Length: 253
Image 1 (cartoon, rainbow, N blue to C red):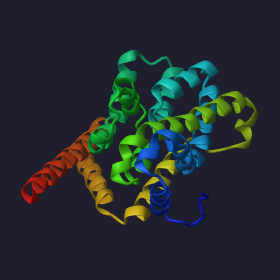
Image 2 (image 1 turned 60 degrees about the horizontal axis):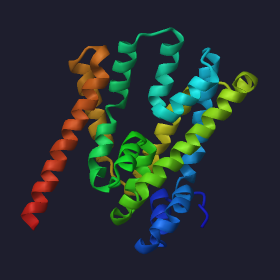
Image 3 (image 1 turned 45 degrees about the horizontal axis):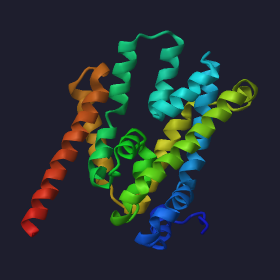
């Protein structure tokens, strides 16, 4: 099944998943995950490549760039860690940055708790490998297929990212001069992801909530705490929404 240019990502993914039968998922889910992750791979390969190039340019060895993509696997954090590691930042600064940048993953994990694998190792990996793009891809699938597809989709997406990092770190010194403005690769990927989510669901409320949380945090907090304040505000809103949905479901039952 091919991906047609201009097709709505959500419709394409739902069409792909509709071809699967629950009893056949154990045999085909990895191949299906690889196919479904192709649009993400088109973003992860160049973005991972940009990370590898910038890491090598900053003086980090290739093996360290690869370790970051394998064990950290958090694009925004990895880009933020490059100047910190290059300047010899302390462990406390790195830990604080990691906590603040990845705090948004709490927003993603809550709606997918029921879709996590049952095996402990698979569950731990699925949580660790949950990224913005994996969340976007899995939540666009039918609800009854998410539990079977979360793990292979997460692994396929990370494979794209690691491959891009390897290419960038290996070829970085050669191609860096010919590919300018690599630092904008990750913001562009986030922008594309947001546009695709809107095209798939036509819901503008999340963008408005995010903007309100950001502006409120900028108005009420000093600059050093704006990110944490905005994320905590969004997390509180998601908690209220989850409580409201659960209460409505109980009343309907």
